[in-house]
Length: 272
Image 1 (cartoon, helix red, strand yellow):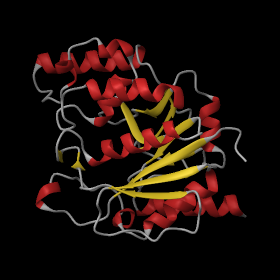
Image 2 (cartoon, rainbow, N blue to C red):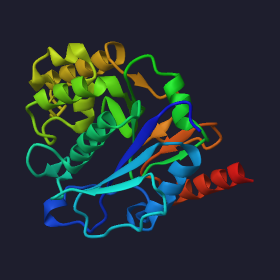
Image 3 (cartoon, rainbow, N blue to C red):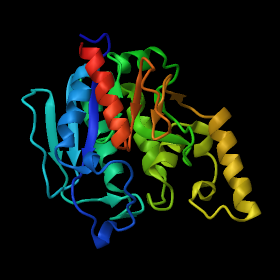
Image 4 (cartoon, rainbow, N blue to C red):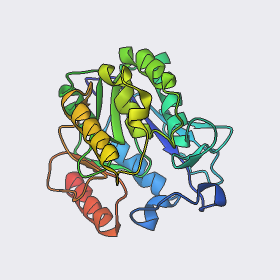
């Protein structure tokens, strides 16, 4: 039994590219986009973590995975596919809708933490969530940006329950759609007080070829490096490469065929 009480939240979408989501870029092995991969994701959660509930939010997917026989599992289907953050319906992409549903569930539950694990992210190291929470000094813990272009990574995230209402309120106050300000940037803003006082336009996605925009990019970088209101995980890797499977704890998203093979070898060693 875990010394911490938390739910694990994830999203679900499985389907072909369509004109509505043709901007979606596909990374990693084709295996991670198949319906059968859900079982491996679940086994990763079940083996390495101890959640009180597992909340999967389905973006009206045409293909639904087979649910494991686990009383902790809750599968919630949205009314529409919100779409990718580069091309979505309304104000929010499907991932943001998933975050909001999961955060609301966590706040209404008796759990003390909301933990998010992306549907194509796998973890290694038993007790990885407990190890992360042990290291928290703020209400928020996200993935370090690493060599990615965003201020943080969302492959795995943790938020303390008391911080959820204020976080959602700050998030909702951001007027821009997810196409204009990315979900990663919105998480950074909503968890960093000083960022909430700055003009929203500073955080818009932009072409960084001009001197002015390069300067704005630098300001964003320094703001979230030294003034951020969140912790980063004490381990890698998320979407950052390479993944070191010799580390005691880790997680990775967009795994290619070689990384999936290394992960399975690592898990088999844990079992043996």
